[in-house]
Length: 160
Image 1 (spheres, helix red, strand yellow):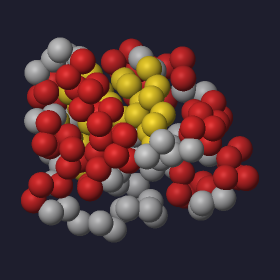
Image 2 (cartoon, rainbow, N blue to C red; image 1 turned 90 degrees about the vertical axis):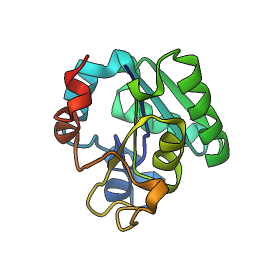
Image 3 (spheres, helix red, strand yellow; image 1 turned 135 degrees about the horizontal axis):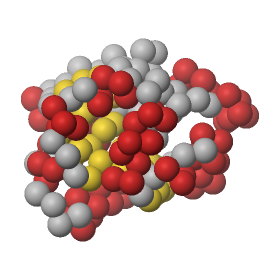
Image 4 (cartoon, rainbow, N blue to C red; image 1 turned 30 degrees about the vertical axis):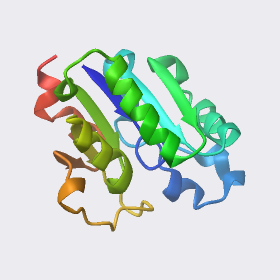
């Protein structure tokens, strides 16, 4: 199994903690259960995020998760992110159904993951930037969770 996970409002409480103010970076926290999840599945987890490289790298450092992950990928924009997502799935040499994509954006991670045939999970944090979005048919994830404890209860994590 390969797990591809987003950073902002997925593994980190970005909107809740920062509210768009990068000067508050020191207050950035992990979503409930994220550390337990990474302790168990980090060696199978690739972080994929888009945005200003320096800011995203600083978030990863503040959270202290780099050593818990298989790898980290920071790309400049969402178009590059979707291209990199497809590359990661292909490079895994796994059946796409064995690739879990976890993200908060229905129009990005979830839709692309569905197109690729992956197991998609929406992280829907309370007060997150995209929490109010409702999915279209092609954006409907296999599951929606609010924290990593719920994520680890999904059947796909029972078939390692």
